[in-house]
Image (tube, rainbow, N blue to C red; front, side):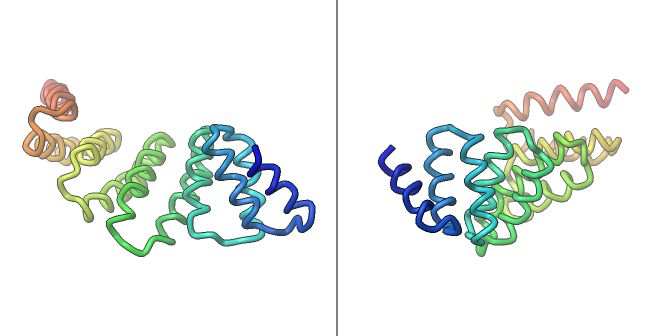
Length: 171
């Protein structure tokens, strides 16, 4: 509460201080006040270009099920990252968002970007198989599901992959 009061006081003095809006958004997000945090992050975006802001905005948009906006901010967050290894969670989240939006080609590309960085990431391999199924690419889906089973035979994804393979073969 003290931090919020200090930030609010600062905004009274200068309502154009984007960094204060950003810091307020972080505090409110940490307190799980997502709708209010979103307002502050969107205000911050008007005045500053903070490298972590797109990632914070994406997380709040996801919490509010604003998937199209989340996808835009995830792509922006990726573009701000310097190290490829740090991009993989964002690419994975982006692929998941596109999948939920039924934008399967975009989801495929995002999941492939993850696999360029971490080729043995089982969860992404499984999700890529799911994307292929949605695009009626049975052969590619089978290949991904087989890789999942090879990489992590005792995982939940492997069990699901076995079920998917059996379904595909029954068709």
